[in-house]
Amino acid sequence: MKRFQDIVIASALSWAVLGSGALALVDDPVQLDIHDAKKAQFHWQVNCRGCHGVKGYGSAGGAPPMPGVLSKLLSVDGGREYLARVPGVVNAPLDDADLADLLNWVMLTFTCEPLPTEFRGYDAVEVGALRKKALVTDAHLKRAELLSKLGDSGASDGLACATGE
Image 1: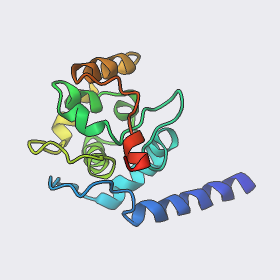
Image 2 (image 1 turned 45 degrees about the vertical axis):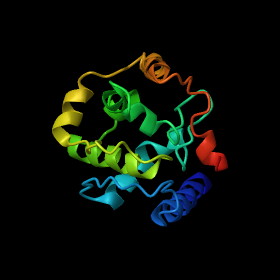
Image 3 (image 1 turned 45 degrees about the horizontal axis):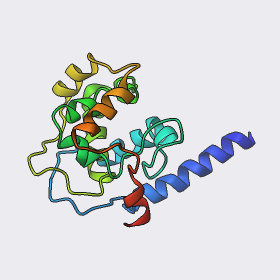
Image 4 (image 1 turned 60 degrees about the vertical axis):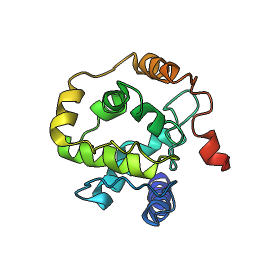
């Protein structure tokens, strides 16, 4: 029972932080159609936060950080597709429409830099197609390949955002 209470309390605290909008790292001019932002936020908490952390900075030896890298990945050929093909995304127990909303919410919530001006939101059709091309065991290799196209090792992902540098 104590474990359950701890989980409920942790979830409530996280909901308060996420619900406050305190995590939006940049005022992004890109407008995305998110059908239900609160639901997308809830899906983040239930399906993503455990590995990526409350603020999206990742976990040692686990999920990579998102702040400081999302905009970079979106600016390189194949980056958009990569973000919808990683194991946590393709295996999320969500329908394609809810997953598209979640991805769009993540793009607006965990970026340090503005999204590329040509960025358009994910939709259910695109997400459904990309889920069929899962990067099951080689997501980390694809990520390194994409970042190398930018001349970025990815070693500092999220650190500039985390420290305000």
